[in-house]
Length: 214
Length: 192
Image (tube, rainbow over the protein chains, first blue to last red):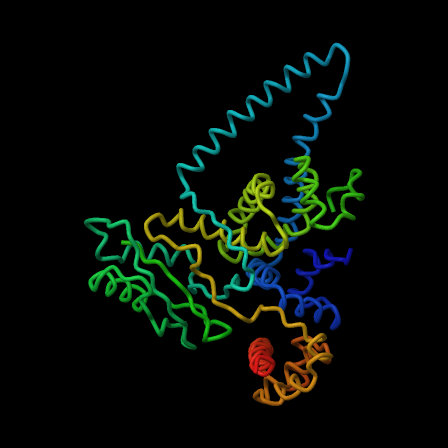
């Protein structure tokens, strides 16, 4: 097996800190150029200096605990003799508890989230450097608060708009891909045009698609 | 590395083997070893969306829980890129939930991007050397020089910037754009 694991958190952090030698630096950059996952992760880590290594080792411990939780359960049920029945009962209760928890968890998950977590398997379209300067949360808040047509009544439908970002960080080439009629389209376009700045994309030809809900 | 115990053996397995064994046995340790390989990337991508350490850490563990279920259900050929898509969707869904009214479609925030279509320069070099050279020559100077230094002479961004005097931030986009232009040019020439 080819060594896929050389690009660990230490290498990424050292890259961001400028601590790697030229060869290694090149390897990281080449990898990021070929693999959007690596490029996006680097972009994220670069915004959070210093503490990622620590967060990562915490996460590794958490993962270990999570995995081991089920390990112990397995071992318990292997013990033979008189303890077996106790263990079996315990295991059963554990499993029942687990199932109930799982069902509850699942239900509440379903209640909260739209069940459309469809995974698109085409990795060619998966990269975005494109995002609002202030971040997505702030952008959504803006869209929600400034929408003039949802103040009184909600339609439950959306206008789909695609556009590019100019060198000045402003949306341009706006195009309505899915219309809800003139009034709604106009409001959607207004919101985007009057909205916050975007980060300047690496390629001005990149398009972004946005659904504005009404 | 945290998974010391006796799973050095498991670490030898490649992604595909870990997945098919997990699909057969449901043994979480297998999935743990697999996830551990990419957790830092998942974390980085989450940071890219949330810009918040704690929220990102939570997301990393939630994504593992998603994997527990989903890896059993899907035929996964390339786990790494599949995981990237799953991570992105998870983060976008979380942001979407947080904003309730303004629904972000799953495609939203995604660039229609051809930069990352894999272009194997080495292979291209052998089989289509002349087309390749022609295409290189057709590039604007900055792109041609940057691509040449990066792909053929294996110089990193900093070195390219130092050699050429180009702005460090621009070097990367010269390479990206050059690569895309070459790909388009090769496709055009080999198609006709």
